[in-house]
Image (cartoon, rainbow, N blue to C red; front, side, top):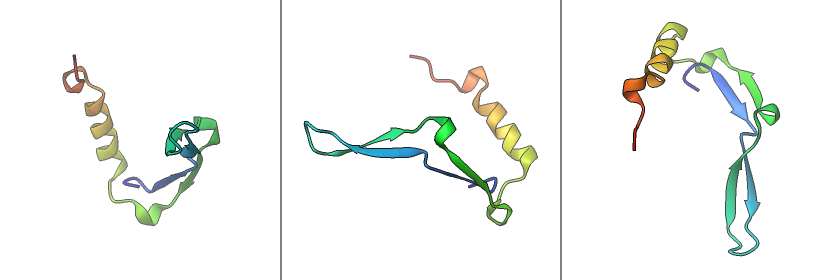
Length: 64
């Protein structure tokens, strides 16, 4: 949403036969429906790329 991109069909809800509760599971990326909506954009591309690069840097990864 921050960059004006909506992703539909990311999750599938299934019923667990044992507990009878609904369980969410991620669908494969091939099943995702991506729609660009520029009016929803609130972050510029340059800032988005910098933030994503920072998130993947080793100093921000959690070690156990």
